[in-house]
Amino acid sequence: MGLTLTVDGPRWRDHLRAYADAAPGLVPVVKGNGYGFTPGRLARRSEWLGVDTIAVGTYEELPEVASRFDGSLLVLTPWRPFLPDLDPALASRVIHTVGRVDDVDALLTRQPGARMVLELLTSMRRHGFAPRGLWEAAGHLRRHPGARLEGLALHLPLAQGSHLGEVRRHLNDAVGAGLDGLDTVWVSHLTRDELTTLRSSYADFTIRPRAGTDLWLGDRGALSVTATVLDVHEVDRGDSFGYRGRTVPKSGHLLVVSGGTAHGIGLEAPMGDSSIKARASTLARGGLDAVGFVRSPFSIDGKQRLFAEPPHMQASMLFLPAGARVPDVGDQIDVRVRYTATTFDTITVS
Ligand SMILES: *Cc1c(COP(=O)(O)O)cnc(C)c1O
Image (cartoon, rainbow, N blue to C red; front, side):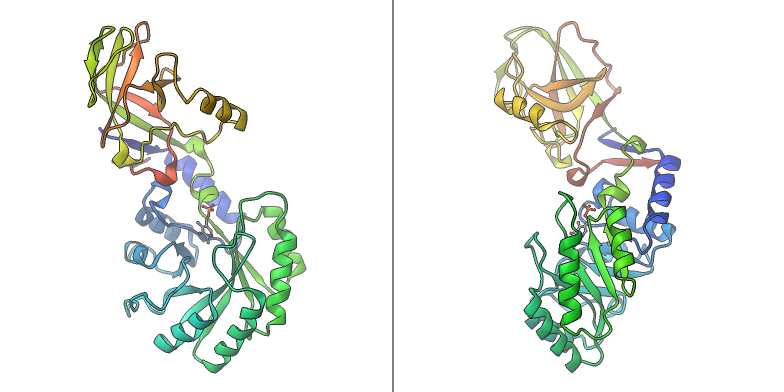
């Protein structure tokens, strides 16, 4: 009866299958809250998809997925010397991401047969080697014959025009660095057309796209999120309510619905599909309705409703002005959420 994600299973699975079929070498990303589905569920779904590798964000995420998926496990956060040693049972399945010259040597000293991808510093400027570092890394790799270089990794910004020029520059640098056995490039956020172009201009390389959002959340029509009406109170103008003893500005109903800060429900309504202009005008109004309430992500009868006060830990109070249809206790109402920041009480997949 809490915050529920309902998945139209056949539709979702059709989308996943079609996405994977169109993306050879796909590496599903299952990090964080598992895009709302939990990493464990996405690991099992990846096994069903038949891919040979999935990506997690951190080393801490490995145990949850390792028992649910049999293939290789790429860790996206670069390895650092301060990390604890890997569970020996996992060591041969884990592909490390390495982004600094010193870490190549340090990792191989700790785990001589380590599998690794070398991350290049892209215009994201998050982690990775600059071209000169790659040259030094190639030297370290040569001194550790057990090392298994699994390729290069490029993390590109979300599409703003083509990334191809940048990718080409990096690949040319990498080829120039003389990395022995380099034959794979792991990339994110390239369009299907960009991937096709890249494959034809670098036919010797296997190009492996990492995808999370477009894969798991790519068909929003297969997903619906609902909250349960837990209580309804008729109120008159001037009645006080809530943690801060606020008074009701006009008559209507207070609704207590499931879903609060513990689920990731924030004060600000998510604006996923609204235009910048709509966003600007909401900000200009301070996101407030005429009666001084903030818009909530909960909607009833297709209309986004107002928070009566900031969300509580597991429930939220909404204000429904007089005249609106009042749902019954136990009714489900729609909620718009940011999936990557939401924890659901229940996930139902048909
Ligand atoms: C999160 C992440 C991805 C997947 O990003 P989406 O936008 O969810 O597809 C790919 N690569 C890296 C390095 C990431 O951290």
